[in-house]
Amino acid sequence: MNKLPDFSSPVPFLVLNIFLFLVIITRYFVVAGLFQLFFYNWFKANWAEKKLSSATVSKKQFYGELKWSLSSSLIFSIVSTITIIFWQQGYTKVYTNALDYGVVYLPVSLLVSMLIHETYYYFLHRWMHQPNVFKLVHKAHHASKTTSAWTAFSFHPIEGFLQAIVLPVTILVLPMHIYVLLVQLTIMTVSSVINHLEIEVYPTWFQNTFLGKWIIGASHHSLHHKQVKYNFGLYFTFWDKWIKTESPTFTAVSNKQKP
Ligand SMILES: [Zn+2]
Ligand SMILES: [Zn+2]
Image (cartoon, rainbow, N blue to C red; front, side, top):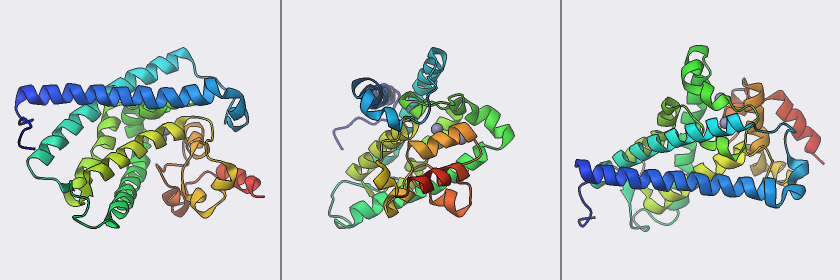
């Protein structure tokens, strides 16, 4: 760490920020692009039955999603740069020796961080659906009624910022190994793409298992974009189930899928 420049000074800050912006935008294009190509082009016929609607995404919507995703990537890169400065100055609980807290703690810290994220996001999402807040903060994301992989990071900058700060705040108090942090960032990216794909990637048998019922996939989040007042969760369905904001249509679909 000693060899690294002080990222709080202007030039290293800017260089790191540009580098992270390029990494984040490349990650978006690679992950969203591969999912879109795999499910809609390369193996289209295999997944036709799992498509959640017949509506297609207009070019206008696609370019709008790219524009918002570019601005989200910029917001994410600024928040990431500031987080790295915090880490460099010793304010975070991020650690690099996997044995510091024991091996068992590695998956436990991931689960705890995801539960914190889930809780924060569920209530943030409910707040963003207040009419006055919605117009300014969340309308951009809901411009996509029929979603695609490209919708995954299509957020207004305020929403992008509110989503980006949860993990940096979490690591101020929760010790997390650097690789566990990277695993969560990967899960965040992939699950957002899966949830917006408009094709259910999870097999029906999995959705009907105990675990499958608690995990959000495209059929859950697609209903949020179409019905708006239901299904506010991020990774897990438990808040929607407990606070009774899960779509009745989703339950009907799930029941139908039961053998
Ligand atoms: Zn929403
Ligand atoms: Zn969405």
